Image (cartoon, rainbow, N blue to C red; front, side):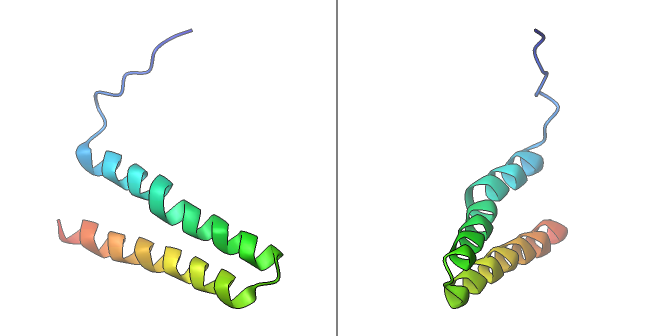
Length: 64
């Protein structure tokens, strides 16, 4: 078994992955779960909010 060298990961990449794992992915997965539970309004709202967070993050990253 070998070790992976993570010293080349930039702070921007770390924050992007952290944001994806902690905010965007749970919103979308909860939205899909709500759709399977036949709660369409709440499901689409969660998915749309995940997409909105992603769009805001992309705009912020393009400014810096």
